[in-house]
View 1 (cartoon, rainbow, N blue to C red):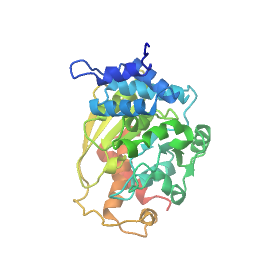
View 2 (view 1 turned 90 degrees about the vertical axis):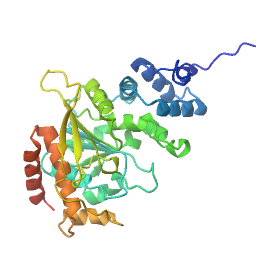
View 3 (view 1 turned 135 degrees about the vertical axis):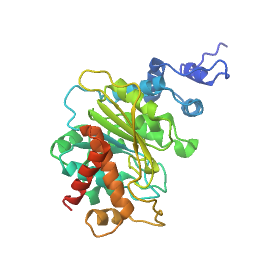
View 4 (view 1 turned 180 degrees about the vertical axis):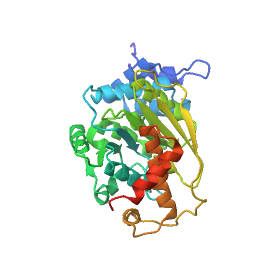
Length: 333
């Protein structure tokens, strides 16, 4: 009896051969493998093996570009119509050591006319606090679809687009972490989807050294300006009491984006602080309303806001900090 290999085995062989024979996937192979996964044409064992091999080998820029472009095609995200958003802000890591101060930065920026699409997911880690849980307190709108998100961003609201709303299949893959025990390549890819095709984007990372992967995808997608930095807890939130290197890739006019991101060192603007032993969601809005003194939190909001102003307006960092501080002092609490 002649046995025939499952078609998906081709990709497992590429990734899983011995050290001298294995190789990364090409962009086209990564996209084709993803298509089979999304269509359900792989077994659970094959999917698990694929994700673990990708994790062990480490994804290349070509692989990540293939996955992101493949996801955008499958989710019909590629569109020529105006995005409605100035900034794509991904939020998937969750916070546990500090409150999510970056959400106050987003609120502050929207209050000053910057249109932001905040997209994310919740529930991958039981001990983390995700953006979605804070939307009601922030006065933000939780979108029911991409079209819905676009409309409410146009109306000047802070909008949160849940992954479950626009990419439920991808969410299922992300939540395999509890079975696999490790993050997968799609935890990176999801941050780069830019569902509303905003001209600028920001991603927080947890591990140093992967910023070039993010910029390679952003450049491939034609993103005008992309900001990546090691944020507190992995979210796009600047630590105000430590050094943060801000990495920006950009294209001006019709010029090609820079292959080597520009690095701006953002040194701490306050002395090193002691991490709070406990905190609650109420602390966040109490800071916004001026009812709670929080030296670290206020400085984090200002520093994070400044990094976004630097990205969007091309300001020097010192000028961006001055502008961010003015916006914070004049906020409508």
